[in-house]
Every structure is written in C-alpha cells, then in structure tokens.
Image (cartoon, rainbow, N blue to C red):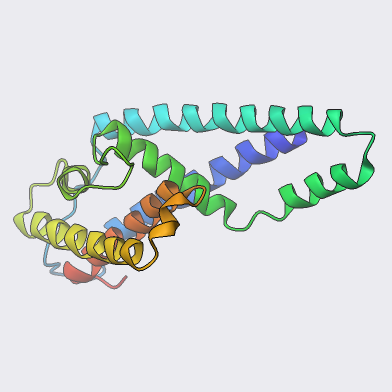
Length: 192
C-alpha cells in the first residue's frame, strides 16, 4: 500500500511540475512580447486533464495490485522477490513517463493522435492554440508543432524499432510538450 501511495504522490508531484512549467511558459519577461499566450487553460482542456488524471491513478493502483499479487505468489523464492523490489525501485524517468502518459491521454481524448497514438499536427495546433486570440502566438504554435513533429518523425525513421518500446507514445507526448513549449517561447521572444 505504501508503494501505491508513493506512486500517487509521485503523480501529484509530476502534475504540479507540469503545471509549474505551463505557468512559467506563460510568463513573459520582456516589456513587448512578440505574441500573447492565453491567460488560462480552456475549461474543456481542464476537464479532460482531470479525467486523464483519474485514469492514470486507476492504472497505477492496478499495477501496484498486480505487483503485490506477484510478490505474494513468489514469496517462497526470496531471490525473485528481491529482484522485483529492486526493479521497482530502479525506475528511471518514472515521473517523466507518468507526465507523458497524462499528456498522451489528453492528446488521445482531444483527437490529436493517429490510430497508432502518434501526434498529428492539426490536433496539436488545436490543443496548444485553443482560446488564443493573438495571431502571432497562433502562428508560433503552428511553426513549433511542425518543427517538433518533424524531429519526432525523423527520430522514428532513424530507429523504426523504437515504436515497439514500452511507453513509446507516452515518451513522444512528453517530448512534444517540451519541444512545442520551448519553441513557442523561443518564437515569441521570451527566454526559454
């Protein structure tokens, strides 16, 4: 149960970090920015993020229950149990993966991915520009999405087996979020 609580705490921490990143990306230190981002997230997007958070919490609880069942079933073999424990404690980039899965869920629910779960330009532009009134910000969003998608496609073409890796779509979603956010900041004239 402590592992489940830790994972829920980790999820909450990641979501706060993502929110902080979004807030930081909306700050403009220049007196005359090239474009104005929206001041708040659209209500529909907030609702979908909430739904995705619940789905991820449920998936984490299910995963923890499965691990618990495995460890109870394997108690007789101490080496296997120790291996399971060390494997769980050695996750690298777990917070990144959780944030990416949340983003992938949002992308999926807002129809911003294709049938394979890979982001599509029209859907990403719609998400990142929803509620935007500033033309320059909208154009920066289009350019950022095109550039970031091009990088992901090139990466996928260079290593076609990467799509078979566990968590690939979550990693792509996280990479897209970071790339698009950074590019919009760069194109709008703020320091990333």
